[in-house]
Length: 232
Image 1 (cartoon, rainbow, N blue to C red):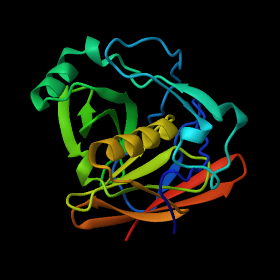
Image 2 (image 1 turned 30 degrees about the vertical axis):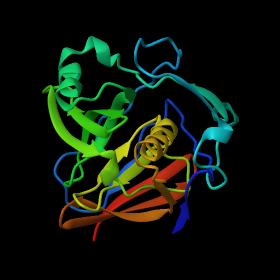
Image 3 (image 1 turned 120 degrees about the vertical axis):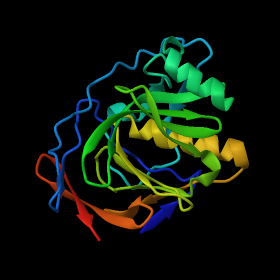
């Protein structure tokens, strides 16, 4: 497994219209059916939400992934769901004392049974929040200091895993993976002067629960990337 730390950089392809494609190589309940939709990067001002123009040389990864030319330079908006207009999300942040939202968007989260669930991912200068948008329920809060590393493939897909050794890990998919990784690396370094590891491999393991390990395998095929999630 290759391991990179900032300021080393890797190119990542993020096609806004690409949806996660994967096989669950086990008997799971429920069939994956939801796809991430395209959202605009219009770069409009978000009030107190941080905007940043992140260019290729500022991203924490380059040289492993093949990336489209259109992705070399892009504007990162940060808040794609207008957090300030959502009373429940604001209540969560106020209760925890978080004031600066670095990133907020809808993502897909993979459960231990292999189902895909639509979630809201919020990253602040102190923590990661995973919210169920249908139930208006905070499913999980992860302190940035608890995150050890992130795992990605070396191919052009939307998957990423957040590794939290003291708890259990998170596997997600987002068309804004580049921005998520960039924000987490920068936020972790700012909060603790710790450089978050970004690991690249076409096969990596993650703890779907505290005692349940899964392996994610990626294979480049004609027309895209085939992803398999296996029991260990």
